[in-house]
Image (cartoon, rainbow, N blue to C red; front, side, top):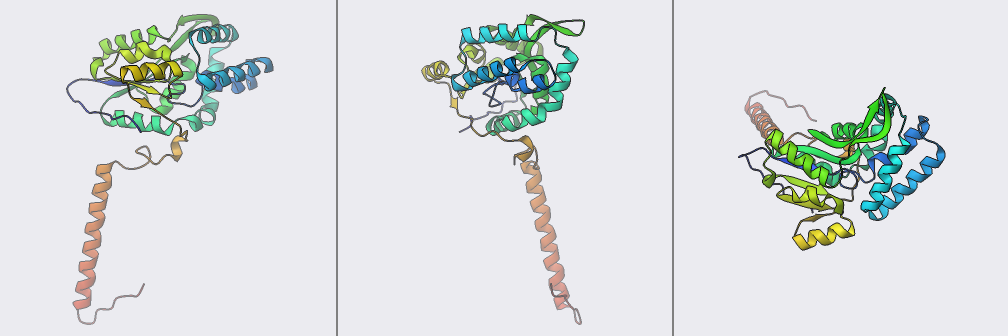
Amino acid sequence: MLGTVENHSLSRTAAFFDLDKTVIAKSSTLTFSKSFYQGGLINRRAVLRTAYAQFVFLAGGADHDQMERMREYLSALCRGWNVQQVRELVAETLHELIDPIIYDEAASLIEAHHTAGRDVVIVSTSGAEVVEPIGELLGADRVVATRMVVEDGAFTGEVEYYAYGPTKAEAIRELAESEGYDLARCYAYSDSVTDIPMLESVGHPHAVNPDRALRREAAARDWPILSFNRPVRLKQRVPALSLPSRPALVTAAAVGAAVATASLVWLASRRRTPGARIARL
């Protein structure tokens, strides 16, 4: 069951979403390994290693030490990559790779927060070159993501800003200050115990598909625990992305009823008119 989204008009608010296993069903960075292989950025051995990392990530999440090892490996792996080529590969395969693994429940929550007048912010440890296009696909208002150092159009392998653990919470507090968000009325969603600082920074924290450690912590703190398990393409969803809003539907129904009533009145008057003939349908 999805969490309840309250509506307050007294101050600006936002909903902060972790990305991997919270909004999408896999690791966003590792999902593009096949595209990077086809683009000549990585070899077959690297593809197999990232596939194994994806399996470990999906099987039980990754603890702090595993995340650190993954960060070091990916930083070394991308050294020398042309940034523009990475962006082009992501853009070319975004809908093919990411669209099918977006959780329907997450997309519905994003819509609900937007309807309530809240900004939606994606906060992810993955690189900005991957996260920003996904954020645009989801209709997010802002994105916080890891940034790599770039020189002469290529990654150096060094990390300029690492969006992980406490730094996510710091980024949220900075955004709250610059955008005027009332954090006590803001929402946050994550699957990982490493995001506890992010969850603690808002008034409405939610654990989504939590790892074992976060599940225990959420239960101890009485945080809502949500289960997302329906990946679906955005264009195949029924909700507000493709249907008129409820007021529009009510208006359309009223107009339709008025037209139908007018038609019946016209037909009745025709029946009462001498010599009138009504065609059989």
